[in-house]
Image 1 (cartoon, rainbow, N blue to C red):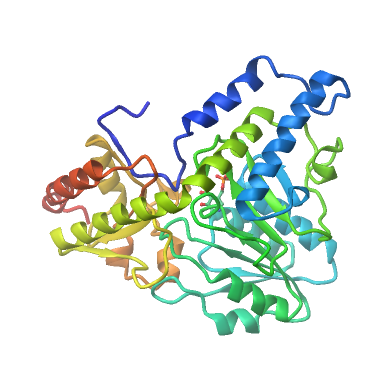
Image 2: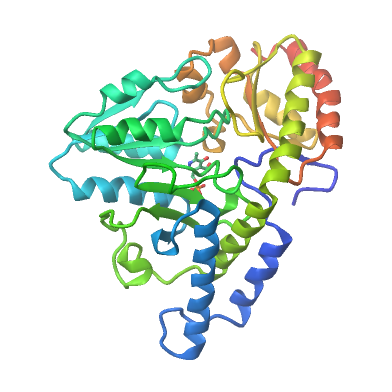
Length: 385
Ligand code: PLP
C-alpha cells in the first residue's frame, strides 16, 4: 500500500483507479456475475453493461462502438493488431516500426524477425522525433503494416501520428497506433487519423488492470489471436472480464470530462518539477525537452549517476518514480529509447522518469525538488558510477 506520506510519480507504469471506477465495478464481482453470453435476462443485463462501456470508450476516442474490441491489456491489443493484420496479407513480409517502441512492440518485432519478416526500425533524433524521410522510404509494396506509438512511455515524446499515418497511407500501408500512453490523457480522435488500428489500456487512465482495447476501423480485416466463443465479434474469444470492462468505461467518461482541466493543471506541475530540478542541480537535464511531449511526463538524466541507485534512494524516501520502462527495471542496460536518441552513456545510465497524474499536487512537486539534491549528493559521495 502506498502510505499517505509517499509521493507517487510513476503514473506511466500504472495509475490509481478512480473512486467512481471502483464503485462501478463492485456489483459485477458480487451480484451481477452472470455470463454476458447467456440468453437469460440476468446474462443480458450484464451484456448491456458491457455495451454501455463500449459506447463510453468509443466516445472517448471518437470511434463507433462497433469499432472497439475489448482485450485484457495494451499488450494484448498490440499483439492482436500486429499479428492479426499481418496474417491477413501473408504475401507481404515487411513490418515497419520505430526504434523507441514499448517492449510489447519491440519483443513482437524480434519474433517477427525470427519468423522471416523484414523488420524496419525507424530512428529518431536527439529529442526522440522520428525521421520522416526514412519512415516514408520504408513504405514499399511489400510493407504489410506500420506501427507507431502516439507517445513514448519513457520520455513522453509525442509522434505526429496524423502526418506519419498519412505518409504510410499514401503508399497504401495500413497503420497501427500504440496510443496506450495517450488515450484518456490527451484528445485522441481516431476518425481524424488515417489509421486502421489503435491500442489502449484502462490502467493507464485510472481504470482497472486487466482491461484494454483495440480500435479497428470499420471494414478492416483482422485475424483473431484467441479463438473459441463468439465474444467481441469473434475477434477475441473468452468470457469477458465484465467488472474491468465496466470500470474502463467509467474511467473513459471521467477522464474525457476532466481532460482539459487535468492537462492544464498537471502540465503546469510537470513543468514546475522539471524547471526547478534542472535549476537546482547542474547534473540534471531533461530528455526530449525540445519535442512535443505528453503533459504528465518528464525524463531527467542525472549525469554520472546510476538510475537504479537513485530509484532505491527515492523509494526509501517515499518517492516512487521509474527508470524508463518499468519492465526494464533490474537491468543495468540503459534504455533502448535513450540509446536511440543518441543520449551519451553518462546521461542515459542516470535517467529517471517522473510521471504525474490528476492525483499529483504542488506540495509533492515542491517536496521532491527540495529533497532530491540532498539525496543525490549522498550518491555522488558514494561514487554511484
Ligand atoms: N504501450 C505503451 C506505450 C505502454 O506504455 C505500455 C505499458 O506501459 C504498453 C504498451 C502495455 O500496456 P499494458 O500494461 O496494458 O499491457
